[in-house]
Length: 561
View 1: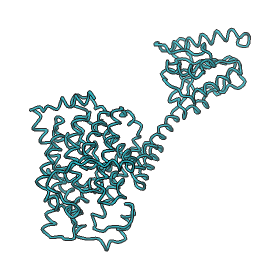
View 2: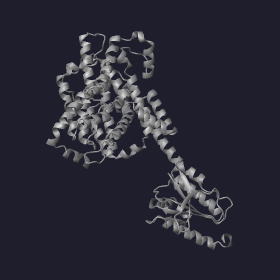
View 3: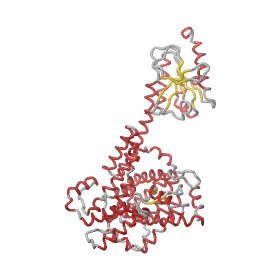
View 4: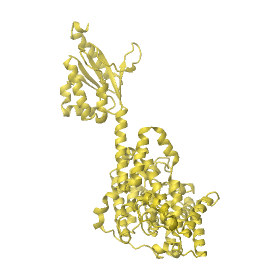
């Protein structure tokens, strides 16, 4: 909470930054107003609700996030996920359900921030995120076919709808297709001019003018779906009765927003050079969504494109993003009638461009070339995103990330033997396959020792066989937890050595591990004299164990002479 209070204290505008921040705000509003409306369309609700998100979510997020520069606004991934969650509902009830959905998303994100869950984001594999974002980008493109062509398919599922449209090309409305493709061409064309930052809005203005001048009556307009009232939205309390039906979807959407936001904020350090606190970013996004829900806006989250825009246009403080949201208000009040005239195929064309820009071919190639496991993880997540409801695809992606982490951790385990060199430093050599009589083997394990890796460690331990009086010294330095499965491995190996009059010595044992051994009774079974705690000076506990082993071998008699 101290971080949030610090944000509020720092909100006092600095005169030297106001001009640049105001310019940033105006630029962002002009560029992102059409995109916010298009994202609301992706979410299956009135395009105007996207503007309410900019108006409220963007400035509120600017105040409370840990990141100074991160732009909290509508994103295509969140919009697709929200639309997927509400797709089965009648259009007349979606706004009310959207308010509850966004409220739940905000609460989940807020709790994630309060309980400092930012560190858990590292468990979401890059390959999974690339597969998910690629799938969302493709869904955005495929989902615009109806508005682009004027043909409404009766099939469910975007892939089937595209296939159905291709079969019924004769039913395409060509004026609608002309406006949609023309919008795409205009955006691409403006991208090669100095006006590229305003390419979206210029393309919309031209397409709208052409539609009106040619009197293309078959082309559907924004006003045909829902008219912008010319006034601000009404404050409404979300209907909490709807919470049970939307909770699962809200958790999935919250995860999408948090992962996206973490990626954005960690790409842009704060003015002091430090990277933002991810958990504080969670809190800020959560508060932004809670505030947005009372105006029935769509979900907001950290936007990579929005952040890049505000940074590149000279934003100097949090006021850049605050202005970005505030400048949307005059549009809602004074220009509502003009927004009603925007052609729906124009917004579809804009979203197709946005979807294509979201396809990161370099990231896909990098994951593909990294190895088979990341390749499979990316492919599974991509397939789930394209074929399943997004909330399930998100959970599948998280599950794949966890399984991937466990699998890779277990595969990275390696046991080596440390060979002493007279007068020099020890060297690492492969572990002997089988112990010999009176042998002292010093072993060290690299990688995780948790349950998935414990069996692999057990298989790499040298075979006791018929050896007599062998001593195995196992280094555990730097490990705060070894888990119950690994304890079972140690106990079994201890009994094998004892059965052949040998000994197992554990060295470099950290305090937490020592307490684990003590609580589970394994310390008593191994013998306290066989467990050597870690020392500040590296190698001390190993030398202590070696002295004990050599003394013991001398005591066993002629067998080891």
